[in-house]
Amino acid sequence: MPPPIVIVFFLHALAQGGMFSRIPDMQLALGLNEAQLGLALLGQPAGAILSFLVSSQVVERVGTRTVMLTTIPLLALVLVGIALAPSLILMGVGFAVFGAAFALSNIALNVEADRVEAASGRRLMNTCHGIWSIGVLTASLIGTAMRGFDISPAVHFAVILVPVLVGMALFGLPMQPAPARPHSSARTGFRIALPTPMTLLLLGYAFGASLLEGGLRNWSVIFMRDSFVAPDWVDTLTLPAFMTAQSVGRLLADRAVHRWGPVQLARGLTVTALIGLLLVVFSPNLIVALCGFTLIGFGVCVSFPLSTSAAARLGDRPASENVAALTMSQQLLLLGAPALLGWIASTASIRITFAVLLPPLLLAFYLARYLAPKTPPERVAPPHP
Image (cartoon, rainbow, N blue to C red; front, side):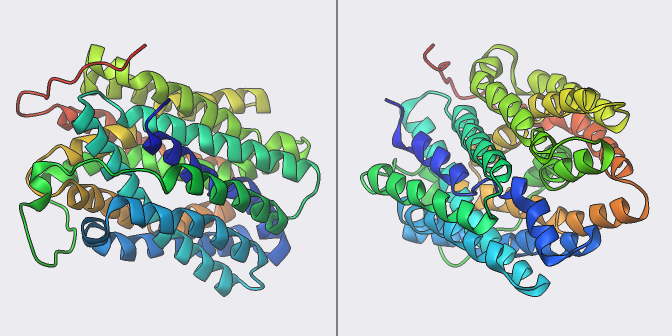
């Protein structure tokens, strides 16, 4: 039986309800163009950034368990409201609330996973994120089926709410939080989670993959719809293809990090993401595009887990503060991405939208060097086979 935190990672992903697979439907329901949709999506990173500023304080004072029990069901509930939003403004507000809840739950999840990893002496972070990816994949497949049966996004998200509530009652309520790392109590008083030079270097590595993953989630279905002639459910297959590859990669990553080290693994997978992105940009048919999206899934699978784990292990301040600072800075850089990519799609083409994501991956290849610890690494055993 896996630790309860692994199950909660899955429920956190499921709570997002395959939202990205229903964005085209919500766009059409309100009659939004790509630029307007980008403005609505801007609410999500905006809400997340405001939440990240104080998330470390909330997690340290309230506790990881309470935060997860509160915010994960809220994610699923807010999606129903977004689907029922009658205007662009209200949809943007809904995305902002969703982003704030996601930020708090995200910090609590990753801090708890780091604490369990430290207490058990075994690598767990990539596995947790692999299970999370499986949860998103499950939600995306449900979204694909819902689209195929022409079920409205609001009904779809209401159905997802039920297993999320049941799962949190069964696994979240009985969960006992792991002990905090020693440096968690090293500083007192109110603190805003601002980045340090080291977290900025880790951000430089993670940003390219995060920008690419966000662009893929928001625009890949629209890319398929506008580039090729295929049924709606075929267009939606980009997300399951991406998530399947990402899930498999993450489940194998803890052993790979133990064998090759974080830098070598990160650089090899960044090259894989570059190849996949080139296939998408120059894809002559939907099969090649799907292959490209699959390679991207493998290529970006370790970016967030490796950078998050490295931030949590810095030891200069509470892990929640470093994780919050890293994630907040990442969201801040991504703040204008939906609107910018929407503007590029509407003024140039959807292929150019993906082409502009190539340079950040090249930067990630170089900055992966900062994933290597400057002090002797912790002696962490590989996961059980």
